[in-house]
Length: 284
Ligand SMILES: NC(=O)c1ccc[n+]([C@@H]2O[C@H](COP(=O)([O-])OP(=O)(O)OC[C@H]3O[C@@H](n4cnc5c(N)ncnc54)[C@H](OP(=O)(O)O)[C@@H]3O)[C@@H](O)[C@H]2O)c1
Image (tube, rainbow, N blue to C red; front, side, top):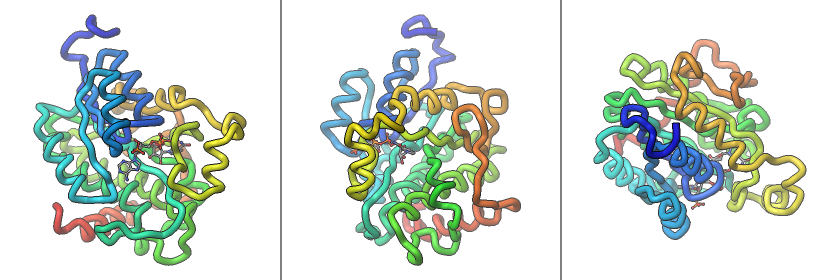
């Protein structure tokens, strides 16, 4: 199905966060090309306006390092008639342990807390739309995040930028599982994926080492293009829950990713959910 020939009932309304660059922008381009209605969310006003202008789609701005921005974004998105897919894709790594103005560790806030808040504030709309909610996770969850401690989601102990990022991306996976457990009955299908190692603007706020790997010709040795990676996102966005993917699962392309972190009874996922709720009590 292409462009104007798409039947109205097959046309999905898809919110893509982190849509100003990288995987999000590539996914937005592919989805618009397929005839879907994309709502772009970005942080940088110029970059976001440029991609939205190129695609002819509406856009919204939000810096996840400010939770009041996320609340405003949710108000704006709640004004849409329906949201069939929420792709919680914005995120990234940092170079040092810093707190946001809200008082939370920055990597955790940007990658987990803000996504949690946005999803919760949209939950009635998402449920009414039988929406798919997608988290962009990372293989870093296995490489650096397997020692995740639900009692210390902000890495007050043993902080390194890699660990904080890996633990936050594991947090996205645990959030997916718990979202599915709590809201699957209300029609929500939650799913996560790891996008591969992708040559994007990733790492621009991270250490000199990460920047060297991602922003010199070295990147061509080990990365895939954003367009190729975005297919992992669009497959889930357009797929049928239960047939094309299993809700609550995390994928490495089409296969479920085997996690090093074990949470057989879901208690870590439940603890992380409570930890987010406690931190966000003034916003929920
Ligand atoms: N590239 C990889 O190898 C890789 C691997 C695993 C997972 N990921 C994940 O994939 C997702 C997309 O990243 P990418 O690789 O496409 O990198 P990217 O090109 O840097 O894009 C990241 C997007 O997230 C936005 N963003 C970053 N910090 C934000 C904040 N504080 N508030 C709101 N938005 C923010 C960026 O906005 P600006 O344009 O303003 O910077 C941009 O739109 C991220 O969640 C990342 O962690 C990437």
